[in-house]
Length: 333
Ligand SMILES: [Zn+2]
Image (cartoon, rainbow, N blue to C red; front, side, top):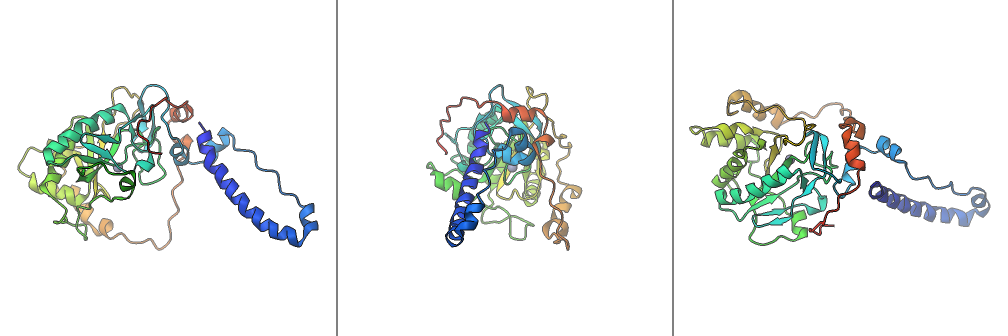
């Protein structure tokens, strides 16, 4: 499977070799004797698998894999440090959904996540009156850290779903890569944008949080505050699962509980029983520290990149396993 990883490096090497050759061409013309006595060094042998594991970061390794591994679908490790064996592809079009950002190849998940989406999409459409939902990233074919945007989404149990209705037509590949989701939050990040926020968004979030397999739903704090206001006098079991988190002003992030068939899946601690609407839960998110963070006087050291050895050891087996023979019904590449 490393063939798939080697290719970009080969291309990069060929490209830079071309630049060197052109530059050297001028030098050769001017000083042929010197050029003749200094032959080009022999090409570097390709990296061994061991060298790749030590040199490339986990996100480079997992981000380069196009297909899932063979075997039974299992979630391994933690949402932020794990992988996914035998990921299942979520179809890019359904009666009540369309998947966005197809070029990222992140519409793979544990079967429990695929089942959740197939159930949630029609339920959300019914609750909101929308045609359907727009689905963002799930996981990569073998999970693991992704090259951009997410710390989690590594075990095939996380999915982002946009805060906007599916249009009444099938979007083109290009539209799916370029359209932006709607921001529901005001410019000062303290409240909602009355031009984009609708009561349907309450129904949308509530429908997600009410599903029993859902562990958490992450939203921007201003959205959580509004849910607390409008649902104040109602039973709040679902509201406890909706937690504020950075960003999430244009999508919800749904996280499922560990599936029963995945003994190495590490669960996140369950949410507390209260609705999370108290000052102790919300005030922090509206503090200067969050809304107007100070730029540190000295640039901080970048965090150490996650390597394959930092993930559960079985993730190495998942990464190196042969690819599952999948029909890849959706032509995305
Ligand atoms: Zn997310």
